[in-house]
Length: 367
Ligand code: ADP
Ligand code: GN1
Ligand code: MG
Image 1: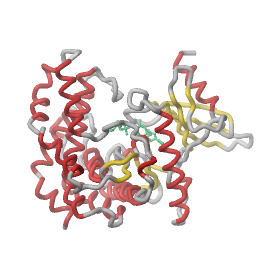
Image 2: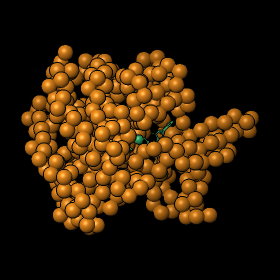
Image 3: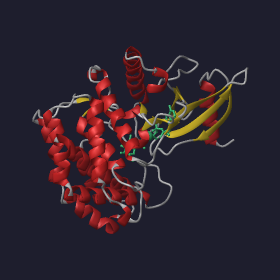
Image 4: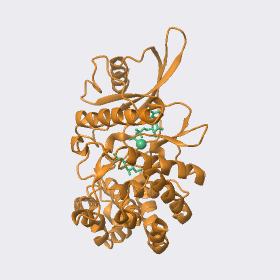
């Protein structure tokens, strides 16, 4: 048994799945955690599936704090959903405890593992296949924010400090470029120039927060389309997943990260930039759905800053991909060399497109 298999097996033994484990395969296409789908069967032949994840130690340095956040938030969501007559087992993640009654397991190498029941009969989309499905995801993310509007934000740990601090992300990029450990800087000068020309933009949302124009709320902070599960039957977004970065943040960033990923028709790592185009219609559709889901919770200032959320999340993500490329791809999983640079390039192309559509984007939120 390889070392990796041995650690997977340790993790599988740590949880009581209520049946025998009959398989555990790698699953999904997240960039951060190592995800497995665990299949089990009980004495009467009944099969159930679970999601087992090894939490990325490159991204998360305090899994205990991260899991405390997730246990608190999922228990709270469960209550809200039940009170509204919904089904907590399908509409929120829930944490399966270890045999010791903990919310995660630590393996012999110090890595943290956790388990969620698999939410069946759902779709996890890598791109907005139809405008209706994109609208459904928008309502789900807006609703997620509304359901957490009274959650005690002060009890949440900051799982990744300065996660959406775009100024700091730029500083990290500059540091990576100065160090240039793999001599990759020479090949990315156009991307560096594009980003450096937008240095002032990096302060826009943070300054609005500092000025008290934008409120700090409990936000998800990683609102990619593939972080919401869509009911296979109804096509409605039913469960927001990937709660590792739920912490105080800006609503415009939750809005913006969804736009970054979903308001186009290309893969995040598309190499042919002629296929990478921001879709203003999808932007409008998402805006409508998000505001409907949020149920009037956003202030007029937040509405005004929505386009900034879109542009800044896209620019910031471009900077993060480029930083990781320069530093040697330690953070985002890659399947081929240069993938983080390709990802950076799609983000910067989308930023340029958004700048061309800026007036229409600004009009969309207030019309
Ligand atoms: P990452 O942080 O690496 O993106 P995620 O928590 O988003 O990890 O999980 C990766 C993938 O696993 C998701 O995109 C989704 O396909 C699947 N997944 C995660 N949790 C569940 C769940 N409870 N039920 C069904 N699928 C899930
Ligand atoms: C990561 O975990 P995943 O794959 O949903 C990243 C996001 C990036 C995204 C880019 C914790 O999201 O911040 O926007 O990749 N998550 C973390 O695709 O860094
Ligand atoms: Mg994910």
